[in-house]
Amino acid sequence: MLRSMTGYGTGSYQSEDTTVAVEVRTVNHRFLDVHIRIPREYSFLEPDIHQLVKSLLSRGRVDISINIQGTRQGEFEVDACVVRSYVEAAKKLKEDFQLEESLDLRTLLSLPGVLKGRDGTEKDADDPTGPLVLQSLRQAVEGAVKMRAREGEALQADLLRHLESIRDNANRLRELAPLAVVEFNQRFEERLAQLLPQNPLDASRVAQEVALLIEKSDISEELSRLESHLEQFARWMDSGQEVGKRMDFLLQEMQREVNTMLSKTGNLEITRSGIAVKADIEKLREQVQNVE
Image 1 (tube, rainbow, N blue to C red):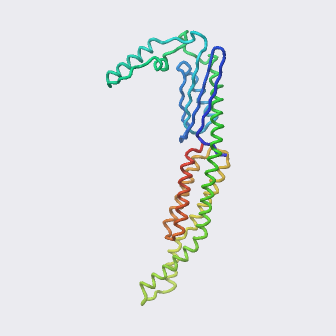
Image 2: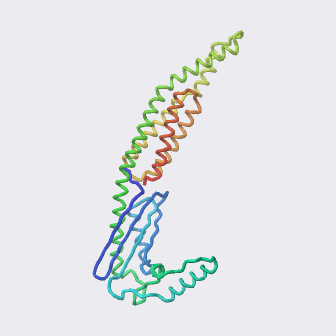
Image 3: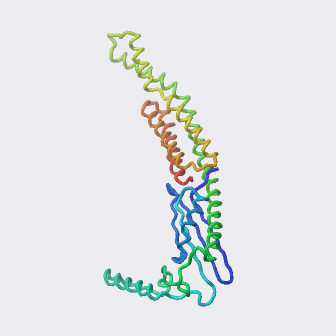
């Protein structure tokens, strides 16, 4: 079953003196791209956070927001030096760019480093809050994974619909291919008769030339490769693996085969079916960008 790269999950922990809240949002991306927002004093957890996410997700942009608060009175104090730096920077920006708004208290308190533990020390790997953060993070990421799986089911159903449409048109192209060759042969002979009515050519020589031209206009090889690609695409959908990149490459190959077919023939019905296949391939390419 496919997995989408769109997901959301939350995790939390609360005790008498600590509250941890984690939000995880994921969207499509070519690679695994993790962005973390965490209080500065807990930045030592970032390597563990990356490792945990990597163990559960293989692809996509992952935005993680971690909020940690102490609930006991006086748990935090204001870092006056940091506040002074923010205020001076805001004042300079206001003067340099003629800004009207000022830095309000609510915004100031939300800035990184303004609030710190009363003991004034940085947290380290022995801090008991660390495991609680990772526990809440796992809960949030697993929630996002479940949502990605649900989204993947809907995505797979839509992919199957377009895949079936391509199969139907490929079957139609398979039926039309011999007729197109016959039509080409007839048009070629009629054109020769019009151009050279008084000087009939050697029949065997004409047959050789027609055979060469027919070979160049035959789309059976491209059809066979297209059908093979369709089978491979369907197998990947049921593999349960991370196949988004491979699917995108295979769809490019399908489009190349269809373009070659359309360049080989002027048959109206083949052109219509070929264009329909191209439209479905474009839809598939849009959708597989969100497949993990």
